[in-house]
Image (cartoon, rainbow, N blue to C red; front, side, top):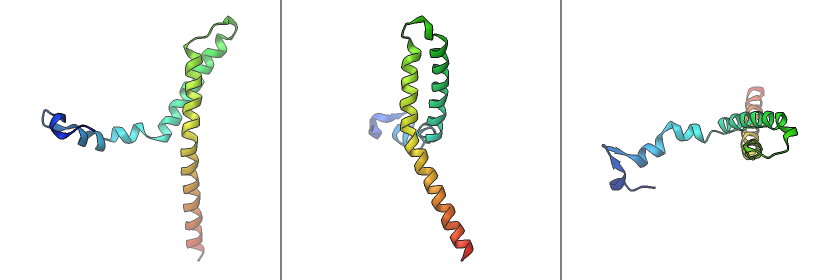
Amino acid sequence: MLDQTSARVSGFVWPYLLENLMLRKITQSPYLNLLSGLVLLFTSAYETIIKFGEGHIGVHHGVLIFSVIQLVKVFPEIMHGLTEVQEADDRFKEKISS
């Protein structure tokens, strides 16, 4: 991380901004990563299917592989979150029934 003396620009301290911006939370959101992976998957799959008979490799093939990797990376985070929601729901039902 940058030190405060070299990061002070126009009265702002960049490490403070980088650590506390909502942008960091948005970019690290598993749901946003899931959505972007799905969009990349569908658009690149469409291009791959349309140009299937041409017999050449294009950018859409790389984007297709990248989107699959993105989806594989985000899947465990989504499953972990769903597991926590299920456990909280079970505890809530136990609390109400007792």
